[in-house]
Image: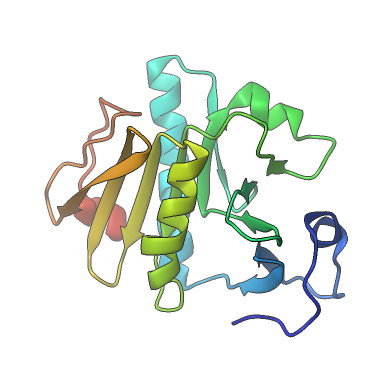
Length: 193
């Protein structure tokens, strides 16, 4: 659902306040309200945020996973700006700390996050599989997870020569992640979170 207002620049978007607690993505200058999703949606995102933090610690990486907390400016074409807010973002702790005193949005001229994750809902299916997938690839994000409770599947997209190669995991299949190579997790465990 698009909010019926004039198109906004990125600077206007960062200052936008409609007096509600609604969080918006900016897509081609238009405000798109994001919903909280179902309890399952939130549970899956929280579970994976914790899992990625645990795996980062095991690997000795100074990374942090953040749920619903980091925006990513998109290079989406046209004269209007786009900024996405993934369900989970994995980024270096130093980069997360650099956002402490400014809007928590990774700009186009900054290094991309290490991994982004979207949990699919009925209203975001097309966007998560198509628009965000191409936007995240153009940004050079090495790994993009599409967690789909509707199809009971997790798709791990790995960036290869500017495009994502995708592998889908179902049921008891072990998820393979280049970012977290020692991850011991199946699709059914994630989707039951």
